[in-house]
Image (cartoon, rainbow, N blue to C red; front, side, top):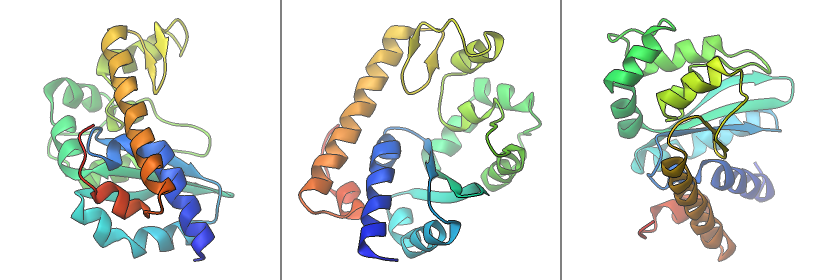
Length: 192
């Protein structure tokens, strides 16, 4: 993998998953417009660095020239998915309490098809269950606020969350601009 490809992936990850990379959000999903092999090489090369930061990444799906990568904070995602409201919601889609995190992610991967996402993906991205249900019942319309997700309840809380996510993105891009690679940038301590 070339340095240009590596920097491009660093930049895409920083833009699309800064809150997760900085420990503020449980997970993000990123679509890359490059071959699966390049992304797989990047993720393999940096698996240890990801795990040192409590992170993991998997390829959820690959179709044509797009590769979907799911990056997550293992502890945060495990805690989020074990919350009663989230567990109940996911049970409606066949996810059981006795499934491991890896089994749940495999099931999610199997349910994703090119250009289509199952509704429960919002739960795996840390979206409030009320907003996921609102999205489903309104067919994606009539939201109170549209940002990192479509908000159907508690718009003010979501607005504050969106500001925090924007701040994460700004912090990572500032760090990349001074020449740090992504893993140096996420390892650097700073309050968000």
